[in-house]
Image (tube, rainbow, N blue to C red; front, side, top):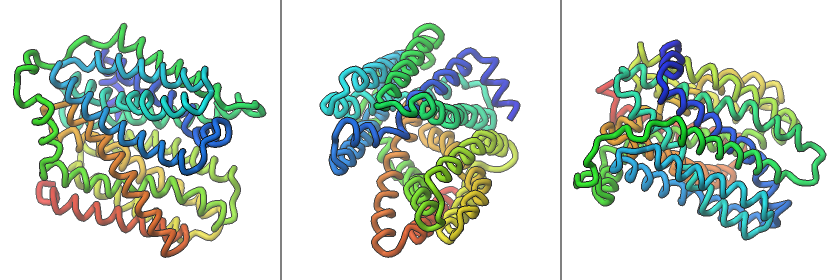
Length: 399
């Protein structure tokens, strides 16, 4: 844990990356909890249009993440890409706040903000390129620290925005906060990030061309491992969908209980992300990831069986501990699949998020058709367990 903090604080490149990641987290944490309220109730989209817009935005985000990663690798300059996508965030969030109309909301959510979302992968790529002198264990610890900053943003910002806008006629000012956070990301990259961290002359290297790069992503060695991680990661998405419904409908809790449980888990994640990062100094990454995923499977099964509100509170420790593993350890694992390409390797993070979200949607549809929300939680755990099995088949011997 100390390695991560010391490395992040002493190295200027890592320090500015951590700060940029924090404000990137601020920008999404301010609006995401209230996005459906703004889009449906204030802007006037219907449920189907909003769902379709979110699905299309996820696809655009994956494409943008992969393409910007490939371009940054070719240029050997991650700062320029971060500057560009930061401006997309400023424009997108600002457009929704200033125009406050359905066309502006659709344009921002479909084009500007998904491209801004590629900044997550780019920052991890910048960290990877800046941390060439770190050992694999230290790099994992640093990546865990970066991921913890996002959880920190989610602990602090949603509640603060909710308090400030309580009783307000509109939640749109949350987008102004997000635009300001994206602007801070731009300023940090402009003033403090190193202009280039990669090797010169990559533009002439055939391996860095678009088609060759896409073939690397689609190679079975890479794709099968991304699928394994996506199966595991899908449990988080399924949990996000069913947890509020289980607490309020099956366990007899209130919306307030949902907020408190989510806040507790987010706070625990910050601590446990760093613990899991430190664990890789003693345990092979694949073993650690498999262990954390199995614990989350156990949590999903137990959540599907709860009948009282206090059961949900009792599971927060297990949920926070296991979720911290799933949201942090795959970062370095995915980057290592294309280790010599920080931008392309880090773009696999976005590919994993999109693929796992699609898998979770299928699980939710099947689970709610065959049973209740508790059954869906258990089914989500079963899918995650299949991911653990695939991961061990692929990398178990190496571990």
